[in-house]
Length: 242
Image (tube, rainbow, N blue to C red; front, side, top):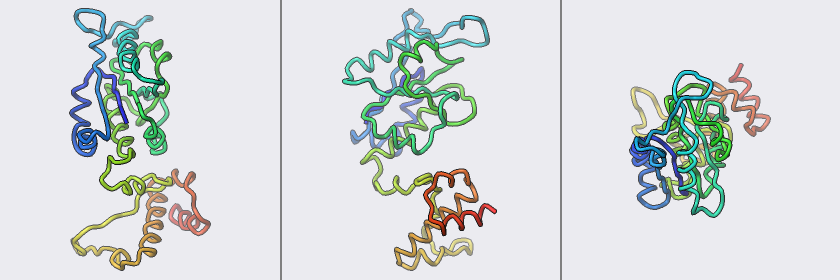
């Protein structure tokens, strides 16, 4: 997967994503992430990309032309128009389902705004998806972009050491992940659940499924509306919610 991030702060992007799992995937060539500085496409000697908004108002607005020229430089060699994700609180809230959808793309472009936003005209021309990571305001789109790249990239085959781990993460099947335990068997007088020590894989999977349902019912009952549950599991979830 090739990811291009249009930003005013490329170092912030690359320093954040160039470590840990995404960094290793980039080193191995499984994942390509490139932060492109929108200022490089400014049409003035000071490389400024902002100006006052028409109609007045507080703050400055990113101009259309530098953003468009940056986009053109990225896409001119692409065979087809890629999806362009604009980080905006006006967008759809980012979910695991969306991460799985975006992970199927060969090319993705992220557009990070700053100041009071970006001239609407260029957004209308290049953006395909408006995406938010939550109902709050940040100073720019870099942090949301990095959050999304992290979530998407771990679903790309080969990025994780154990490809099964992505399949059983939280939000898979609209259920939260079950509790997990490691050595020692007893810690602070707390015992690992005996079923996990039994070696009986069928019972272990049954326990994990039940724990996922219980945890979801307690912490995120809204997710259960989209989860596929048996009648017995629905009764279990209902008893927890009550």
